[in-house]
Image (cartoon, rainbow, N blue to C red):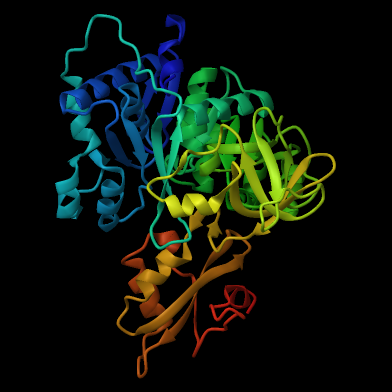
Length: 496
């Protein structure tokens, strides 16, 4: 098994077919050109000393370079560590050290890269690497992708957690294979004439787990945007004939805000939403405007993406994400605090058990012990399964903030704010937002005599955090409410 398997099993008659396109630059590749690029880049990785089992970190925006770098690493059996391209340079040493990465692809200029990162890994710009790779002589004998064992870690994604440091999610071939068994059974079919658009970050899972290999498996086309812009998306639908679109609730809310886009949206064959709770009013408005369903799914990177897909039915209400799949593929349970599985209709914590569930968090035994119970992975989401086996997501249990599908740890933001010389202490929580679902809100206790303003602290946070981690709201308080255990009552702050 290998991520590249389907690419190298394509019949010769399909190698000239258009495959991947960068909408921002106009660069594109056929399936045959992608094969050649993967072979050349993988050969260059090997020439630079990368072997199976080594880790290759990829710190790139959506684009052809990301696709080729990831597939080249997988081709030779190297572990792909997929990093958010918005992650600041100062955070790179943490990720490289955590994964023991020997190689890093990044578009950062050399002067932006910390010396500590350069000491840990060989660091290369993809443009330079591509020139090197193009000059290599490829072997004339038959080549085959590396044969991964089913339980070997082959990808690492980082996600915010309940500690101050991001957690590495270890996924393996068994996870990916099971994900596709679920997708093949429950996903709405697409075929060779389909034209998908990708603007969700490949580094967050859905694009790299689903869209890239799905495009190859169905021999269709993937049109890539570096980031979401409603005008660019609509222009691509109109000019290229995009048939399938994938996003989070805020993307669809923004598209619906422009009446001049509505006629073009009717041309889509399918629109799919995941990563955050989708309000029923958005579902209803989409159907009224386009005449088609806004499909929905549920999953986490820890479950190799989607495990429940509402693609053949209308939403019953907000939070309805679809029918629980065949338990032989994946089990969905609702647990109480002690880990007991609850009966139909009872609300508790959504848990997932089966081959799609990650191996665990990288080098985090205590966190693994906390989130796993009798084989169940506890997601931190609240929900229920009704008597018809329909799954409904009703809220969050964890303190994690979900901004349009991007998970933010409050503790990462607090650690930065607390380093400000005029801040005595801070508590960060989620605040409701009509467009993004949630945004970051910080409650601040200043040191005696301090005069830092909201603007000062937002500017300071922006110098140390990724843009979506920066608080959108700051409230100054003299103290924090405490619960009966003497801990800060985050629930009270969220409702204040």
